[in-house]
Length: 106
Image (cartoon, rainbow, N blue to C red; front, side):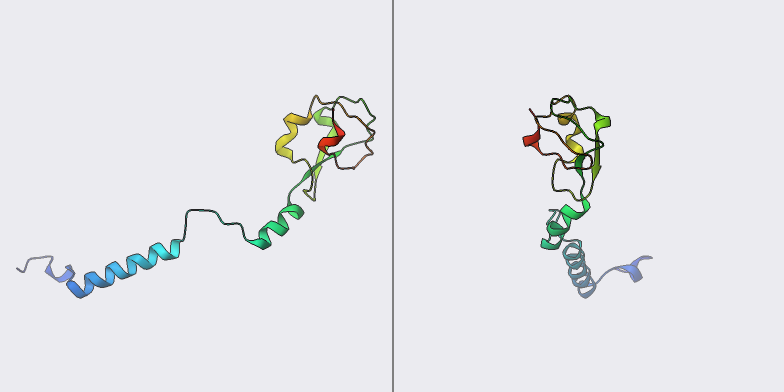
């Protein structure tokens, strides 16, 4: 049956191509799951930041946000854990620009 839209209608061959190419689109989009490549894992430490002492800090210092800065590489306590650091007491002296570890805290 011919009508005004007959010229834009898909025949079986066109429809098969539409389905095939639609599947290609889903394949090209990939998975919704995030996969971390080995190279990304290796570079993660270089690009993340860790808590370091902003100045020389003595044992028994109760940490404030001003006592800490976050610098690369990210091999220690990350900036997302600042709330867990503030208010904690140091159990040893920490030199300026030294990385803090959880074992340094009471």
